[in-house]
Length: 153
Image (cartoon, rainbow, N blue to C red):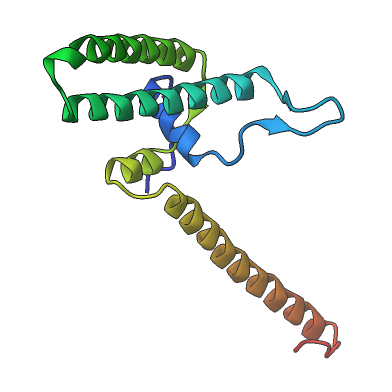
């Protein structure tokens, strides 16, 4: 497994990061919600742009599925709005400096949930932690036996 995390600044990578990110980058406070820092605010803007793009794509799907000559102008307007939103998303994505592990990008490309990657990494860490704990407990036992202390179980 390649542990390098390439540095992406494309809209697709930002979309992957937004899909994999938990929360919206906002924290509660007495003065209401406020962004934690500019990079999280930028990520929130990109996430909003992605959601707006998905909404436009849904509207386009509806327009195309019920297309008639009378609906040509609204279809063109929605296409122009989609192009403008994609341009906005690209500009916002250029301001994001997010590292997404290739495994996450590959999972998304395969149509899988990026949470699977997080769960697998978490389970791997737990297993390694248990192995390390077993080794340290064994060394403690060796120390107790050498010191004629029989507190080892």
